[in-house]
Structure formats: structure tokens, C-alpha cells
Amino acid sequence: MIYGYARCSTNEDKQDINRQIRELKSAGAEEVIFEYEHGDSAVKQNLQMLLDTVREGDTVITLEVSRLSRSTKQLCEIIEVIRNKHLRLMIVGSVTIDCRNGELDAMSAAFLQIAGVFSELELQMIRARVKSGMANAKARGKKVGRPHISKEDIPAVFYKHYPSYAAGKMNITELARVCSLSRPTIYKYLKMVR
Image 1 (cartoon, rainbow, N blue to C red):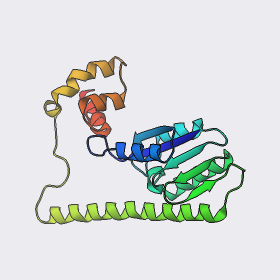
Image 2 (tube, one colour):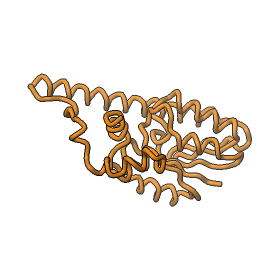
Image 3 (cartoon, rainbow, N blue to C red):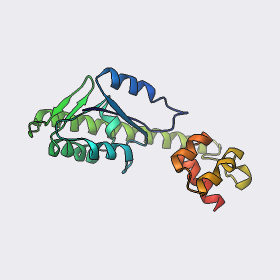
Image 4 (cartoon, rainbow, N blue to C red):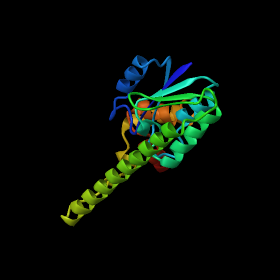
């Protein structure tokens, strides 16, 4: 079986994951697993589900190393799973690690790990620029951060769907989707109404 894995850091309103899905299918993916989660998040539920599901001889395709992880440690753990489960990992247009015979090509693994280091570095540089920009704005007297909100500021759409969530008819992700809000915002609202 050939699986594709796609990931975006934010939600479907801010990033379109369909481009990744189309390109993965074009590269041969028979089934595409996708999720919205930060690249260095300790838990990527759908990626973990995929790694638990794949069987010996299967192939996992993704478009960039950074889609798998922006953490070198996590990437090394994924490479270990690929080796132990005798899988093939293809980064489209980049590198392929083929462990279906039980062996791990050292050069390919090293290249993938180096790409992971650069992916992690890129994330750290982005965060540093954001912090610098926020400090600059604050120094110029601008208010930095999200505005303080109260229960009265929570949108009506949240209250409309909250009873279904409270009754166990939907999970956090579904509540976020029907409200067109991010999961962190949903968590914040839940904390406020409880």
C-alpha cells in the first residue's frame, strides 16, 4: 500500500492542505492521511496512526521533510520506525529511504537527518523573527498579543454548537471545524465557559 502524509500548521481557513493532497496522489499515494498540527508538536495523532497502521513493504510519501517533523529528534524516531517496520519513505523530488529489505542506507538516512536539521533551524529562525517583531512593536508603544476577551466576547456560533460537544456528540476538532475556529481558540473558550 502507498500512503501519503500531508500536514499544515494551522487550520483549513488559514492554509489549504488540498495542494499537498493532490500532489501526493499524483506521486502515487493510494490513500492520503492529513492533519493540522505544528511541525514540532510532540504528538501528531494522524501521523502516529499512520505509522501504527503501515505494514511491512508499504510506502509512505510526503512532499517535504518538514511535513513529517520540524524536530530532528522526532525525525530520527520516524526513520527508526521506517527501518524497523521494513518500509519505504519517499520525500517527493528529494530522497527515498527504502528499508523494505531490512537495511538502512546510511547516506540517505544522513541526508534526511541533515534536511531535518535545516527544517528545525528554519522554524527557530521564524520564531526569532516573530519575537523580534513583537519586541519592536512593543517598543514603539503598540499593544502586543491577543486582546483580552470575556465570556460575552465568545461568538454565538460557539454557544450554538457547545451543547453538542458537551453531550459528547462531537470532539474538539469537529467543534472547531463547525465554528470555523482554531482548536486553541476552542480550548480557550471551553476553559472560560466551564
